[in-house]
Image 1: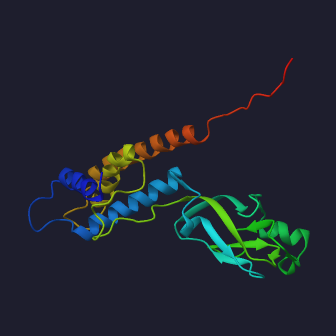
Image 2: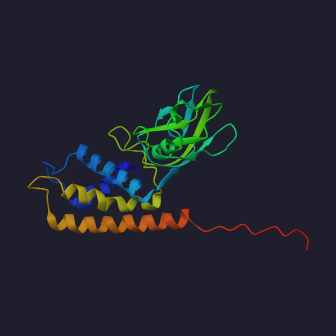
Image 3: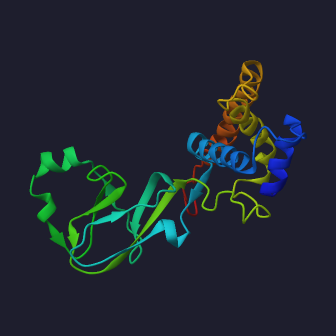
Length: 222
């Protein structure tokens, strides 16, 4: 479904067909984007390791701290692109306990990363003396949210989940702080439906992402 089709589905359900409309286009778009963000955050639906704008950091010599994209919900894995070796996650308390001079450490390449040294940034330890590219695997939100100039495009989430967005949009719509739109009964109903959809999608993605896989040992020729 395109953004327009998703919004039209919600608009038709709200039966807001008589002028002046109870909700304007900007409000409908904001509700859709709020719902997409909530869905991605609560279900960890979008996992990405290939988008260079979000998942690739060009590290320069003796520079250790870099901003993370505001689309990132959670960092899952970090590795050096030159050798594919993973970096270990430490928090600042652990680094301080080990050696309070850790910020002065240098090496040819980082071996550790911290996410709590500066909010919204990733810090590499030791400071690299050579340039390198660090790759990330992350949970993120939708890269291109709905806007007035892209409503013919579709959200990145799987198509099978598009139809569930309507309940979240309508929950937000009826929660508008306006005497003509605020409806406690409809708020309760659509919030309940939206919560059920969130839980269903979370469970479905959890099963998909965390299937137990065991590689059988190779016994050779017995």
